[in-house]
Length: 331
Image 1: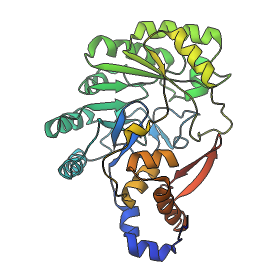
Image 2: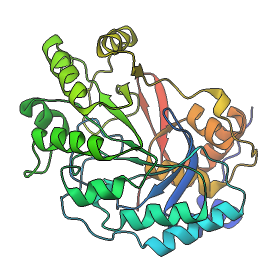
Image 3: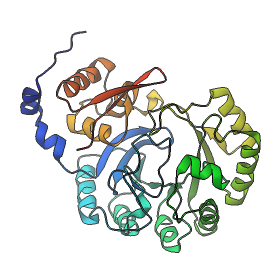
Image 4: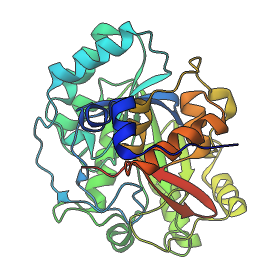
């Protein structure tokens, strides 16, 4: 296979480079999600504005750790962009509010979800770290979604601070009590994610305490995850698949290991668009398989676009557990 590398200037001329790279967009994808199928992402908080600074974050270290809510992204603009996407024939399993920071920090989250439901029947999911669910206003906002996917990686304060490095005003009991209160109020589905790091939160007593907390929270599903993509702190060890399966069995029938993306998630559209690829890679690192699955192209075709973007300086690559991941640096 031949790959023709374009100069940065020629690439920008042929593919609209400056406008593509700098155009503000609050949507990305649809991208393949290991939990949500084909997911159209809605990114409403700036990069790494978060309540936590998790050591395993696939984006970067937190640049602004806060618990103050604000209208970071203009809701009307986000909804207009979504309406345009729907008019183009969007196919997605979920519209997922997540992205580059903690979405519950957006003060008009409820208005955004209501606006989405006014223009489409595609179900709405919110991926959150769950740290603000002890607040009644945040619980009320999240309750407008169809599925909420919070996280819980530790149930003792020491491990919580080691893994998640929270804002000083957040304690693990805040988190657990908020999750319990949300379960009592929310009639939709709660899918709890637990991120396991070998020799950090995987001791038998830690798993036993986690199981007790999960019984209090009573989620509909528990998803176990481990390091697949590059992490904020280097050297974190991915838990072996057999250990993940063993822990999943100990946590009960509603617990499952998050699987790799299935080829069956391929979309219907076959023509790749450079702005879609850049939008994906700005939000998270993606492997070649992730890109092929999200954009419904062959590896050969995807590699041509990746090569052009790398040659133009728009995309970089890194290795994680023998897999190459591509990412577009944020400007």
